[in-house]
Length: 375
Image (cartoon, rainbow, N blue to C red; front, side):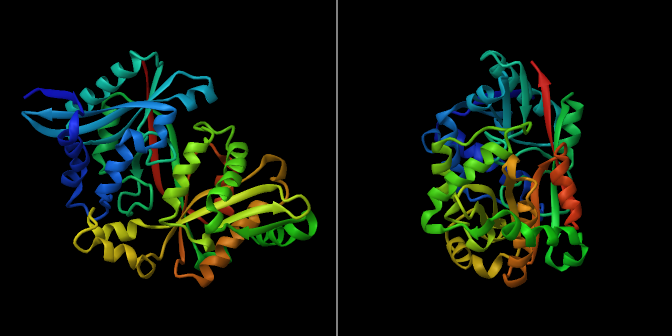
């Protein structure tokens, strides 16, 4: 039977869109089922801050009435305005091992984007690159951490058979507190001099002032990440949404702000998140009947973290602030249940950060690939 592509229309179609990966990956032990309620909320346009500066359409691929694939096509106006580009994106890609299905989904997304003036299609990214992004091409045996996708190997094979070209690889680095002796001594030397030589202190972020702290995070992010391939500045609505999401996983022991002692200027920050995927794996995508119990007892379960953001304003990158933030993570791991985790993703072209991970004794454990097609 031929593959039919249809736009998601109504609650029944949206349910089929959300349910597909549960059927595709249910027997893969590495796949972590997302909380279905959260997925419905994330895909609801009036609840997702992305739609304050973007638009999207959702597609189902069907064969003989059976859903065999899904994808989205979206335009991030904030990205295009910042980068002075006319790019469109695809995301939320899930499908059976069938090249015809992938080709139909990609062609539909490309047509949708081309009709809206886009010159290039990039992805996958679930609306934006700071959400789940890329196709897993290394690390299939690893369970994904918070805001990481997992795919079986045939996803990469199909993408390349469909003629999609590599745009960028995203790297995940593993770090363990037991590897402290592997850290280059210069890291600790630089960290010790940050306050005495440069008048900069590092303090924990505060939950009660989390929304205000995120303004400081954005100040650093919009400066330190400005030249990145995928950079989009955080807007007020983006930060409002991020603050709400972080309340569920925030831990003051894993979030830091670096600021000048004399002026209070924020010069660097790091935000690390306990790996809620360890809990989601037990919840099976549902709060009921016992999912809520696993979530409330997450502190007994989570022993890994993901360093999601760590950056320093360009004018302060010579001061050793990054080294101090690295060391604070080792110090936290020495006294917390979480004894290690992953840092990233980091762009393969971000040589300073990748060298920093090597200096910390890290190793690459996962690689995600973002693909592109000229329209």
